[in-house]
Length: 394
Ligand code: UD1
Image 1: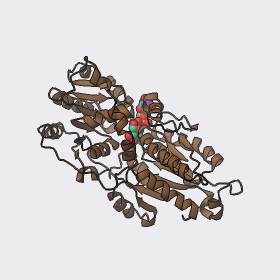
Image 2: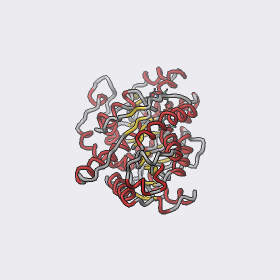
Image 3: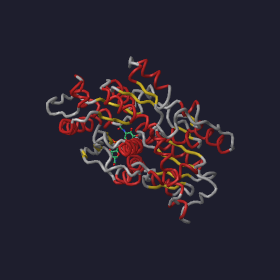
Image 4: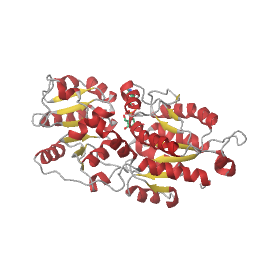
């Protein structure tokens, strides 16, 4: 049973779902029964449904429809609604991706559930006392920003503490997990499932012509453009911070037009703080709705420069070797800086602008692709999971 809830989960599960299909096609006598549960943390079509369609991700059979709420209420509501689902289906494995509230909520439920052993049909589970609950597998484990003001950092630490199998994307994660006392034997360096999905979809994306590239009413992006995403509460919830970041875009845009797809939270705050109108009046700034996976990937691939506070985009730009300016004080993905094309600059305008213009002057770093980001992470994960279940080795 795989859990998804929020936008960044969908691209991570897409390659895993495909690896399961491939496994089933070549192991017809012992197939994996894969059930996807959507918590409903994200629910707008452009934040959810669109991704299932584009990524050919099987539609979830179960949707918990939790919607938006405070952290406590959202997490609690997911837990309440997930417990009966888990008891009904009693999967061998609960597979969790990333660091959103859906991830930790379902980890908590799965770690304390008590299956009825009579009812449960799996041989592996009947043979093993721990089979009274599912094996918990966390994909993208061990990432740490060391900033406990980030809700995601809390979600990461707790989910990892509750997981039986921890699949990591970069070697720093191993050091982080061992420091927290997690046994080495539970940790597997498998690569990056989000990069698997990127590789599967890159050709398809390259054939697209996004609206901003076709429409004459937009600024001319033929000679390059910047791509911007922002949604972290620390960047978009305070008027002063959001205003300062928007002022940076206004300084960059006369030299390099910028395309800025708006997360619902960001759009709401831009309107609330009276900034939205000034952006629409700036010639070189194009505001759009949240984009689909393929359209965004198409824009990412040809961008001159990316400015973001997202975690996943730091990795995607490193893989594509596109310069990325991360508008945060810390990152849980240090390999994107040590090996990749990422710059961690914080939110000070001087630093942001200095880095942007260094890149535009052609003095940016080149970057390499981190180890095992080779399109095979999901396949490795499925092989390990099957082996664990078949041998009851956990
Ligand atoms: C969540 C994740 C974050 C991830 C981000 C990607 C947590 C703690 N945070 O943050 O790690 O990077 O998703 O987007 O899990 N909203 C809509 N439509 C939707 C979903 C949300 O309008 O489909 C609006 C609502 O006003 C909501 C707000 O966005 O209150 C925030 O949504 P929420 O899921 O709480 O957190 P994100 O900021 O999206």
